Length: 351
Image (cartoon, rainbow, N blue to C red; front, top):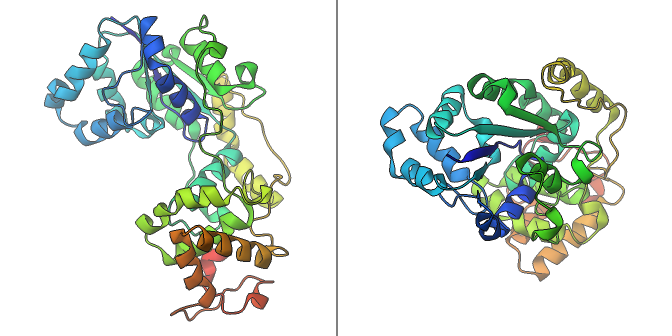
């Protein structure tokens, strides 16, 4: 029976880097007895397996399905198997139990990476503004997406046993070599040399920030989810126009303090029960102002002109926003009155 490394995320903890590494080197690793199964894999990660479990978790007969039988057959003659999807961490109690049933007879080690709460929420927020129709302010996002991390860990520890769950902190100072891929391989097989494996020469999911992020947030007020998601690659391309369009976003000190206090007990439990020491932030979180009102007019013109020149669909949405077509309520953001004709349907969502 194969030993299993079950990598469950979280999201925004370098999961794409890990999955790209495993996918790019799958054939080479298989020659050394390590399997990164194709069954249940959607692209580079096992998101399809996670979705299947969510749909079939209450059907005992599902364990005899073609997917489960295919996965079991694929891994039966390998020494070590790695399954990876950040979506795994969203499984319910019953979903986790079904995962154990699917992997019955194998020794399973669950690996989960956690991230300092403020940075986790900020990165998640930036991704959602870029890739969905999210239009609320960051502090509102934090309020409605409170996510005690110890509860996620304990769900898996209850089913697989605390001794079989490895909790790591996604922080360069705590990662082996300051590298998520190297740190993960240490959990999988310490004898593997990351320098001898193929790596992507660029960051898989760069963050969008500054006035570009704010521009997308404004446009999200006029898009449904599918429209807003269609612009994700265009926004990534536009992020290369200025350094301030990428990287961390500025977070005010009062918001930082609010988030830090909200997760005080969570940090204590993680440190005490699982040895995961998450740093406690204070004060302003450095980054690009979102928005930067002093440069917004200039940046908006650059964004719209470039989007139009490149034939981006994003340009049409920006033109609607610029002209205020069919809109009635003014955009109440101090310092933007000089833009003329810039409106939004819900000023409260832009606070």
